[in-house]
Image (cartoon, rainbow, N blue to C red; front, side, top):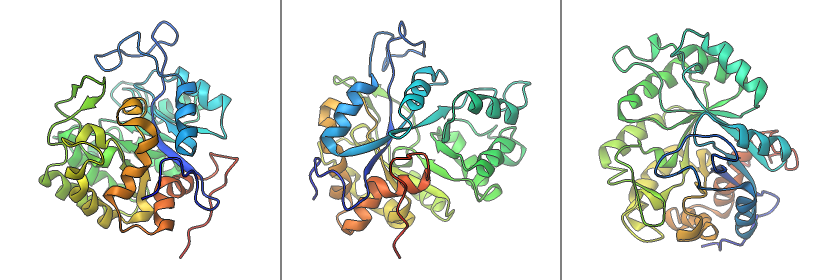
Length: 310
């Protein structure tokens, strides 16, 4: 197993493909809940320190909600280090009278995000083909912008339909593809879920591997496991999913700041090697950074992506 401070392998830097930074509401308005109350602070400076300790050169930043002023500011100030995700709001989802594609274009003009995170794809009773978000998905695909999928149970069938309707749409399944439900907050102020990767869900996720543009985030094990690190109860589903998607469609993410102290940011890259011991050194390097560099080619100007080895 590699150590958390091993840094890069060869010329490929590590990329934390899913991290959150935010400020207290008094400093930068955002939504509040029990996980991120108004006073909670996760500034980018803390993430940079954690990244340096784990050998990560870049990160993809995900706002907590549609209030993305702080993330946009960070990405604008440090474009060689960070790329940003936008969290879809009702206008971009077609849930208001506004043209959703125009809303998407106008929002991206203010904040050049590389992916759109959404927990809604349409009315489950109508399907993706009739969804007002379908034109948005097509526009994302045309613009090379990924869909950052974080869907509740009733939305997963729409994703299966959407990847058939828009096969060129790049999709990233957040946090091993689990569907958020029943969240609680532990004593370390981290989100936790019970039975998050039950076999029926894993079977459903495996069918998404047939769509070649769908990727899987190997992240948030701390929130999904009932065990201590390296979370052996997740080994079996992680290996099934990794075998189906293949090492070139796996990304590593920290989910900072939630696990920054327990189990500690520095330990997080090691969880990939622990769960997937059959990865070759090159494949492990790709999961820890190379795949994200290719997915977001050109967005980290200081480190252009290396070509995929065959």
